[in-house]
Image (tube, rainbow, N blue to C red; front, top):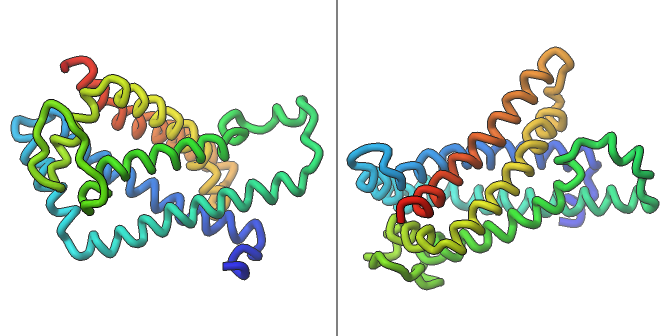
Length: 226
Protein backbone atom coordinates (compact mmCIF):
# COMPACT_ATOMS: atom_id res chain seq x y z
CA UNK A 1 0.00 0.00 0.00
CA UNK A 2 2.82 2.42 0.88
CA UNK A 3 4.44 1.83 -2.55
CA UNK A 4 1.07 2.38 -4.20
CA UNK A 5 0.63 5.73 -2.43
CA UNK A 6 4.09 6.81 -3.61
CA UNK A 7 2.99 6.67 -7.25
CA UNK A 8 3.09 10.02 -9.04
CA UNK A 9 0.05 12.28 -8.89
CA UNK A 10 -0.55 11.66 -12.60
CA UNK A 11 -0.60 7.90 -12.04
CA UNK A 12 -2.98 8.24 -9.09
CA UNK A 13 -5.27 10.47 -11.16
CA UNK A 14 -5.17 7.98 -14.06
CA UNK A 15 -6.15 5.08 -11.76
CA UNK A 16 -8.79 7.21 -10.07
CA UNK A 17 -10.25 8.13 -13.47
CA UNK A 18 -10.47 4.47 -14.54
CA UNK A 19 -12.18 3.51 -11.29
CA UNK A 20 -14.48 6.53 -11.54
CA UNK A 21 -15.51 5.57 -15.08
CA UNK A 22 -16.32 2.04 -13.87
CA UNK A 23 -18.43 3.45 -11.02
CA UNK A 24 -20.31 5.78 -13.38
CA UNK A 25 -21.21 2.85 -15.65
CA UNK A 26 -22.40 0.92 -12.59
CA UNK A 27 -24.62 3.85 -11.62
CA UNK A 28 -26.41 3.67 -14.98
CA UNK A 29 -27.10 -0.06 -14.46
CA UNK A 30 -28.22 0.57 -10.88
CA UNK A 31 -30.55 3.38 -11.98
CA UNK A 32 -32.00 1.26 -14.78
CA UNK A 33 -33.02 -1.41 -12.26
CA UNK A 34 -34.23 1.01 -9.59
CA UNK A 35 -36.54 2.86 -11.97
CA UNK A 36 -38.74 -0.25 -12.01
CA UNK A 37 -39.69 0.59 -8.43
CA UNK A 38 -41.87 3.19 -10.15
CA UNK A 39 -45.04 2.19 -12.07
CA UNK A 40 -43.43 2.63 -15.48
CA UNK A 41 -44.91 -0.69 -16.68
CA UNK A 42 -47.96 -2.66 -15.45
CA UNK A 43 -45.70 -5.42 -14.08
CA UNK A 44 -42.93 -3.13 -12.78
CA UNK A 45 -42.81 -4.81 -9.35
CA UNK A 46 -42.24 -8.23 -10.86
CA UNK A 47 -39.52 -6.89 -13.17
CA UNK A 48 -37.82 -5.17 -10.25
CA UNK A 49 -37.95 -8.28 -8.07
CA UNK A 50 -36.60 -10.48 -10.88
CA UNK A 51 -33.76 -8.00 -11.44
CA UNK A 52 -32.98 -7.97 -7.71
CA UNK A 53 -33.02 -11.77 -7.62
CA UNK A 54 -30.59 -11.91 -10.54
CA UNK A 55 -28.28 -9.26 -9.04
CA UNK A 56 -28.22 -10.96 -5.63
CA UNK A 57 -27.92 -14.60 -6.73
CA UNK A 58 -25.81 -14.68 -9.91
CA UNK A 59 -22.22 -15.85 -9.14
CA UNK A 60 -20.73 -13.40 -11.68
CA UNK A 61 -22.47 -10.51 -9.95
CA UNK A 62 -20.99 -11.70 -6.66
CA UNK A 63 -17.55 -11.39 -8.21
CA UNK A 64 -18.44 -7.96 -9.59
CA UNK A 65 -19.44 -6.87 -6.07
CA UNK A 66 -15.84 -7.41 -4.96
CA UNK A 67 -14.57 -5.15 -7.75
CA UNK A 68 -17.32 -2.64 -7.00
CA UNK A 69 -16.53 -2.33 -3.30
CA UNK A 70 -12.83 -2.35 -4.07
CA UNK A 71 -13.41 0.41 -6.60
CA UNK A 72 -15.31 2.56 -4.11
CA UNK A 73 -12.59 2.15 -1.48
CA UNK A 74 -9.76 2.79 -3.96
CA UNK A 75 -11.52 5.85 -5.37
CA UNK A 76 -12.02 7.23 -1.87
CA UNK A 77 -8.40 6.63 -0.79
CA UNK A 78 -6.97 8.18 -3.94
CA UNK A 79 -9.27 11.19 -3.62
CA UNK A 80 -8.17 11.82 -0.03
CA UNK A 81 -4.47 11.31 -0.81
CA UNK A 82 -4.54 13.64 -3.83
CA UNK A 83 -6.40 16.30 -1.86
CA UNK A 84 -3.87 16.13 0.98
CA UNK A 85 -1.01 16.36 -1.52
CA UNK A 86 -2.64 19.44 -3.07
CA UNK A 87 -2.98 21.07 0.32
CA UNK A 88 0.64 20.28 1.20
CA UNK A 89 1.86 21.64 -2.14
CA UNK A 90 -0.03 24.88 -1.49
CA UNK A 91 0.40 25.62 2.21
CA UNK A 92 -0.73 29.16 1.57
CA UNK A 93 -4.16 29.29 -0.04
CA UNK A 94 -4.53 31.08 -3.34
CA UNK A 95 -5.78 34.63 -3.21
CA UNK A 96 -9.48 34.90 -3.96
CA UNK A 97 -8.96 36.12 -7.52
CA UNK A 98 -6.79 33.08 -8.36
CA UNK A 99 -9.05 30.67 -6.55
CA UNK A 100 -12.03 31.88 -8.53
CA UNK A 101 -10.51 30.62 -11.81
CA UNK A 102 -11.15 27.06 -10.63
CA UNK A 103 -14.51 25.66 -11.72
CA UNK A 104 -17.26 25.82 -9.11
CA UNK A 105 -17.68 22.05 -8.82
CA UNK A 106 -13.94 21.27 -8.63
CA UNK A 107 -13.55 23.51 -5.56
CA UNK A 108 -15.73 21.23 -3.47
CA UNK A 109 -14.87 17.75 -4.79
CA UNK A 110 -13.49 16.57 -1.44
CA UNK A 111 -16.55 17.93 0.37
CA UNK A 112 -19.08 16.33 -1.96
CA UNK A 113 -16.97 13.15 -1.82
CA UNK A 114 -17.37 13.02 1.96
CA UNK A 115 -21.13 13.56 1.62
CA UNK A 116 -21.30 10.69 -0.90
CA UNK A 117 -19.48 8.38 1.51
CA UNK A 118 -22.06 9.23 4.19
CA UNK A 119 -24.82 8.52 1.68
CA UNK A 120 -23.27 5.17 0.70
CA UNK A 121 -22.97 4.14 4.34
CA UNK A 122 -26.66 4.85 4.93
CA UNK A 123 -27.64 3.17 1.66
CA UNK A 124 -25.63 0.03 2.41
CA UNK A 125 -27.10 -0.24 5.91
CA UNK A 126 -30.64 -0.06 4.53
CA UNK A 127 -30.24 -2.50 1.62
CA UNK A 128 -27.00 -4.44 1.16
CA UNK A 129 -26.36 -5.17 4.84
CA UNK A 130 -30.01 -6.19 5.24
CA UNK A 131 -29.53 -8.65 2.38
CA UNK A 132 -26.47 -10.04 4.17
CA UNK A 133 -28.44 -10.37 7.42
CA UNK A 134 -26.26 -7.87 9.27
CA UNK A 135 -28.82 -5.08 9.79
CA UNK A 136 -32.60 -5.15 10.19
CA UNK A 137 -34.95 -4.32 7.34
CA UNK A 138 -36.48 -0.81 7.38
CA UNK A 139 -39.83 -0.80 9.15
CA UNK A 140 -42.93 0.77 7.70
CA UNK A 141 -46.33 0.16 6.17
CA UNK A 142 -45.21 -2.80 4.07
CA UNK A 143 -44.09 -6.09 5.58
CA UNK A 144 -40.64 -7.07 4.33
CA UNK A 145 -41.05 -10.68 3.22
CA UNK A 146 -37.34 -11.58 3.29
CA UNK A 147 -33.84 -10.13 3.07
CA UNK A 148 -34.21 -9.74 -0.70
CA UNK A 149 -37.54 -7.89 -0.65
CA UNK A 150 -35.97 -4.61 -1.78
CA UNK A 151 -39.27 -3.23 -3.06
CA UNK A 152 -40.86 -3.30 0.41
CA UNK A 153 -37.65 -1.86 1.90
CA UNK A 154 -37.67 0.99 -0.63
CA UNK A 155 -41.37 1.61 -0.02
CA UNK A 156 -40.88 1.83 3.76
CA UNK A 157 -37.89 4.15 3.41
CA UNK A 158 -39.28 6.52 0.81
CA UNK A 159 -42.68 6.88 2.49
CA UNK A 160 -40.70 8.31 5.40
CA UNK A 161 -40.62 12.00 4.46
CA UNK A 162 -37.45 12.72 6.42
CA UNK A 163 -35.52 9.92 4.75
CA UNK A 164 -36.90 10.76 1.30
CA UNK A 165 -35.87 14.42 1.56
CA UNK A 166 -32.43 13.49 2.93
CA UNK A 167 -31.99 11.05 0.03
CA UNK A 168 -32.85 13.75 -2.51
CA UNK A 169 -30.42 16.24 -0.95
CA UNK A 170 -27.59 13.68 -0.95
CA UNK A 171 -28.31 12.67 -4.55
CA UNK A 172 -28.13 16.34 -5.59
CA UNK A 173 -24.71 16.51 -3.93
CA UNK A 174 -23.75 13.43 -5.94
CA UNK A 175 -24.76 15.31 -9.08
CA UNK A 176 -22.38 18.15 -8.19
CA UNK A 177 -19.59 15.60 -7.72
CA UNK A 178 -20.33 13.89 -11.03
CA UNK A 179 -20.38 17.17 -12.94
CA UNK A 180 -16.68 17.78 -12.41
CA UNK A 181 -15.68 14.11 -12.18
CA UNK A 182 -16.90 13.25 -15.68
CA UNK A 183 -14.78 15.83 -17.48
CA UNK A 184 -11.86 15.40 -15.08
CA UNK A 185 -11.76 11.66 -15.83
CA UNK A 186 -11.29 12.32 -19.56
CA UNK A 187 -8.47 14.76 -18.78
CA UNK A 188 -6.72 12.26 -16.49
CA UNK A 189 -7.01 9.52 -19.12
CA UNK A 190 -5.40 11.80 -21.71
CA UNK A 191 -8.55 11.89 -23.83
CA UNK A 192 -9.12 15.62 -23.50
CA UNK A 193 -8.81 17.57 -26.75
CA UNK A 194 -9.82 21.08 -27.71
CA UNK A 195 -11.86 19.68 -30.59
CA UNK A 196 -13.86 17.27 -28.44
CA UNK A 197 -13.84 19.02 -25.05
CA UNK A 198 -17.11 20.96 -25.60
CA UNK A 199 -18.89 17.71 -26.52
CA UNK A 200 -17.38 15.86 -23.54
CA UNK A 201 -18.42 18.68 -21.23
CA UNK A 202 -21.96 18.63 -22.66
CA UNK A 203 -22.21 14.85 -22.14
CA UNK A 204 -20.86 15.26 -18.60
CA UNK A 205 -23.42 17.98 -17.84
CA UNK A 206 -26.19 15.77 -19.24
CA UNK A 207 -25.03 12.74 -17.25
CA UNK A 208 -24.68 14.70 -14.00
CA UNK A 209 -28.24 15.98 -14.35
CA UNK A 210 -30.11 12.98 -15.78
CA UNK A 211 -28.66 10.30 -13.48
CA UNK A 212 -29.31 12.15 -10.20
CA UNK A 213 -32.72 13.22 -11.52
CA UNK A 214 -33.55 9.59 -12.24
CA UNK A 215 -32.65 8.56 -8.70
CA UNK A 216 -34.58 11.54 -7.26
CA UNK A 217 -37.73 10.55 -9.16
CA UNK A 218 -38.14 7.51 -6.87
CA UNK A 219 -38.45 9.33 -3.50
CA UNK A 220 -40.37 12.17 -5.21
CA UNK A 221 -42.96 9.65 -6.42
CA UNK A 222 -43.51 8.37 -2.89
CA UNK A 223 -43.55 11.89 -1.42
CA UNK A 224 -46.28 12.92 -3.86
CA UNK A 225 -48.48 9.82 -3.93
CA UNK A 226 -48.15 8.40 -0.40
